[in-house]
Amino acid sequence: MRIAIVGLGLIGGSLALKLTEKGYPVWGISRNPATCKQALERGAVQGCGTELALLARFDPQMVLICTPLEQVLATLAALLPYLSAETVVSDVGSVKQPIVAPATELWPWFVGGHPMAGKSLQGIQAAEADLFRGRPYVLTPIAETQPQALDAMKELVVAIGAEAVLTDPARHDRAVAWISHLPVMVSASLIAAVSQEEDPAILELARTLASSGFRDTSRVGGGIPQLGLEMARHNRQALLTALSSYQAQLRQIERLIDGEKWDELLRVLQRTQQEWQQFPVNHPREILHNLGGGNGQ
Ligand code: NAP
Image (cartoon, rainbow, N blue to C red; front, side, top):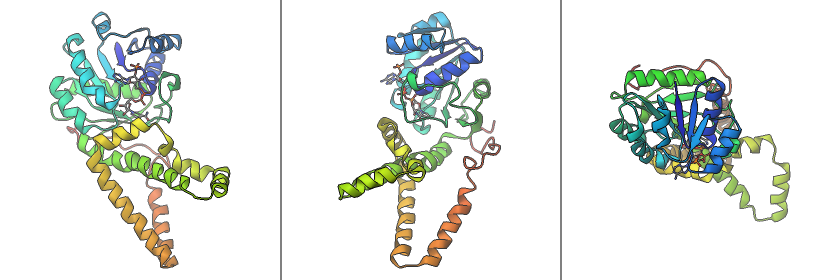
């Protein structure tokens, strides 16, 4: 399978590195010649250029659009003249509803994708071949999705060592609002709240004492601002619902502390300790394939 990757940033570059390592012929398209040079030097791609027209020469069987979310549909539209009849196209955007239906209308061989892996650095210099190993990779087929396109994407997910999880775009967006988009806003609020400490000496001491607990809870809030903005703009409703529920939980805990209801607070913390165990990321176990929804494939 000849694979083209448009946008050689963290995600696109990591996919390119892994797919090349697995023996696929991979070409890249970057807006920036310096990125192409770096991708070639790192052995991530066999060919690279700044023009989509390059694809006419490479004739890929699969194109992965790894640009920011805002550019996915425009990139797909610009790609259309260079696609062969059954070229599979996918994206990696963190929100699926605004993308999947319009993209499938443009190109029925489109399959929405979202690798659940990342880090707080951008660009090809941060790319790593094993970024996706063991991580869930969501595929969001809809009724109009070509089944062979979905099969090709499942093959890709296996090739990069990730675990395919199938669901529909709406369910995906609701789920990631809870476990990805809400944590970014909560974590950002935590950093903002701590930074408001009025006594500079206390703030300095707090920074000095901050250890693994603060690192774990603040990491995603200290990440790339554009990614947080992308999540909020494009998954606004699901994120607002999650934020509202979160605020209610926080208010409940505040009431218990204010009222010195220690037994009740202990019960809340015992329940959250139990609930925490239910997240496979904390206790890796086999990821459930096909969590419902999608087109049943
Ligand atoms: P990134 O490192 O900034 O890479 C994005 C790449 O897209 C850039 O390197 C650039 O590639 C290209 N690009 C940027 N602006 C563009 C524009 N206006 N038009 C066309 N291309 C443009 O970001 P990333 O983390 O890889 O994110 C890319 C996508 O992955 C996003 O849709 C995001 O939702 C998704 N995602 C990110 C993470 C994460 O944690 N980072 C996780 C899962 C999914 P060139 O310079 O080569 O053109």
